Image 1 (cartoon, rainbow, N blue to C red):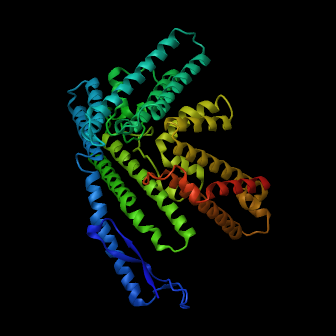
Image 2: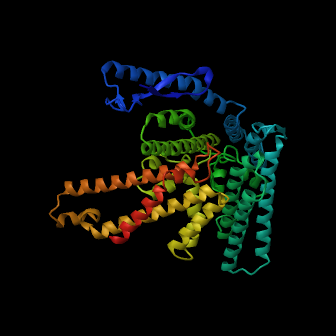
Image 3: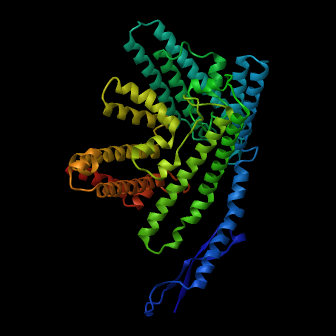
Length: 516
């Protein structure tokens, strides 16, 4: 009789310890009628299980989480340099506001220098064993900024020599935006894929968004003139947000240089918010790197279907945790620099609660990256909606959203799927409200029926919970394909392994909405 323990080994061979996964005993002998799977259920073993859980947690914290955080947030790392540069910039601004000893153009140049410092200090000097200069990423960033400014000036000069019709001004702005987005697609698919180029992808995307926003604000009258060279440089390379984000408008950028009445308590609250977001970023980072893979270990599950479902959710949760880490770091740096929102409030980059508990898929699209969502709504959807219908505006928003990501295959597929899920969910909710107005219509309809308020309320709760569960499945399905930890897999191998269940659910949901 062959007996076998399902075991899992963590990290490397030097610090190996074996854990019987979920304390299940597997019997391979087919002649043994005792069964193939037996859980341990005695009180003593349950106590041992709790002990092993905390032992694993302590080991992972000591050997994975804490070393990873120290490495990521060290002063010479990209995150550490960006945070230090943001704090130094804020201290300089506070000093200037108190003594007025520097010109404004000097402050803009200093802001650009603080934004460019992480690319110079934290960039690697080797790639595949081949040394290269640290200034290569910074040179690519500055060169792209000069190109954007030149195209902006050329667009304005061409418009001044042209007729003053509003329609032609709008067309010129659209042409400028198309050229900028085409540059992103060009650098994604034509230029080489060296590490220097890959490290500047996010910066180029943010700079393109800022350039489009400036030219559209200038043509619409929100800006009286294009910013000067110093202001343009400071805005494009603004401290804290040049590489990790978030996107900030030109008005938000200027907020950091304006004197605002403040008290000791207000300044204290601001720095407490910075420390809180810094702690949240560390928690999300540790979760993405260590804890998610440990808590959702697929070796605990015997059945293939359950293991695939858990692995899909693990990949998606790891990717989302990494995104929340970047969002929290961006929020920390933006608040440390003193950037404020349009309503003079602290900048918020993402809302993880709205994503992890998705009441509607449309909420997920807005809560995933709030500044980018606002940019798309202001400069794409609203402008296209004023010249056409909502479907055209939605299609244009999807196209521009893919373009700013360089039409990367994974991102484009996920954005298309999110748009489809949001549309089908909205259609289904409208059909349910029209078919069952007693339950899903206005509250006044409840009084006209024999259903009690409690029954109607509970029915709405159940239906909304079904939508939440459906959206969680969709987000797991979509997030798993964004996980690039295994480079040997093809782009959509995760969806193939899941038998394209997300697409099938979307199709069946649409059929239900049509049949109602």
